[in-house]
Structures are given as C-alpha cells and as structure tokens.
Image (tube, rainbow, N blue to C red):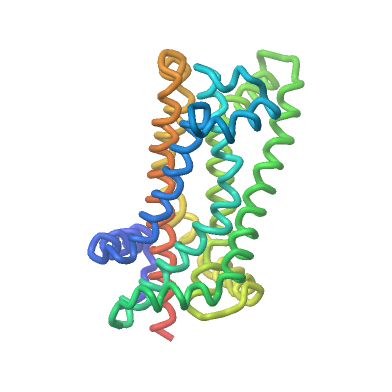
Length: 285
C-alpha cells in the first residue's frame, strides 16, 4: 500500500485500522480506564474512607471548605490535573508505544503475542518516557508563552477600541488558543514515539529524525493532528458554560470524564495515523 499524501485519506485509513483491529485500540482503553479510575478516586476523596488520606492534605494545601459541596468540585480539576503529567509520562506513553508495536505486528502479518509485545515495548521504556517528557516540555513552553501574553492583556485598562478588543480576544479566546498551541506542540514532536518503536532508535536519534520528517511533511502533519483535535472543542464549550456548571457543579466531573474519553480517541487516531503513514513510507523505500 502506498503512503498517503492526503491527510484525510490517511486519517480514514487509520480509523478503519483501529476499528478492524481492536488489539491496537486496547492500550488506549487501558489509558482511559486508568485516568477514569484516578478521577473517581479524586471524586470520592472528601468522603470516607478516602478522606482519611486526602483530608489532611486538602486541609493543609487549601482549606477545610474544599472537602465540602460545592467547593469539592472546584478543587477536583486541580487535583486531577496535578497528576496528569506524571501519569502521561510514566504510564500513558508506554501504552501508546505498545499500541504502535501492535500496529507493526499487524502490518507485518505476525501472530499477536501481546505478552511479548509489551515486553518488547518495555525494553525501550527509558527512551519512551524521555520522549514523553520532551513532548510535555514543549507543550508547557508554548502554554507558558501564552500565559505571559495573557498576563500582559490583563493589565490593559482599555475596555474598548483596538486595545480593548485585543484584551477580550486574548482573555476569552484563551482555551482555544491553548488548544491550538497544544496541537502545534504535538506536531513538533509527534514522530519521536513512532520512530523509537518502529525503528528501535534511541530518543536522541528519534528527535533528529522527527525534525527531518517535519521538514518533509509539516502541513500534512498539522492536518493529521488538527482534524481529530477539533473534537475537543466540544469539551471547551462545556467547560466554559458557566450556567451549566453553576446550576449543577457536579457536572464538572462528567465533563472531565468526557474529556478523558475525547483525548484518548484523539491520541489513538493521531498516533495510529502517523505510525501507519510512517510504516508505509518505509515500505516504499
């Protein structure tokens, strides 16, 4: 099969591969399960018996008020987000790499021995978590840059005219700009993980090859990441619905759960598309 030059055809092919080969999708199901389990733990953190552990921590870092309704739901996103980065670097990245290894086995027509595949993936674990840390670092760097712009916009006194409009755009558009920056950050490092897994390269060689791939197919890569990521706009709209969450603060947990599922789907489609196209490109050489 020839390598796709059309990003929409590449996404369509990857989606069909995921649906036809549930084994490739299974590691992402594990990722979603782990994250939903953590969300559930934090959801019940203010209640017995979990409050025996979490109660003193929440009281010390925040206050006793955050153990009670409705402030417990205000704290929930903070608790969950604080754990997201280490979970992504140490756990999620490993299962994403395992999914790519399963894809390689399917592509080669090999018999699926999942135990061997997970062992093979673990052999590159150090390189995988370094790659994940680089990905997180790039995203945080982009978001920090926007935070500086946001802080500058907040001190603009004008509420009308050119400066007032710029202020409103930067402040109210923050969730959407952050999404676009995350998309761009993902594009910059998206080939590192597939190269580590498929070519068995170390993370530094993979980083170099990733840059070469970007120069060769930058706009293709942008579309590959952008199109599925637009699904997350739904979550942004729900999060920004003040009326919805003020009426029922507990809906924030439901929105977060939906966010976990949406991000998992996006990652599965993006990395399967990138990995499939990378494999097809190697077969043409």
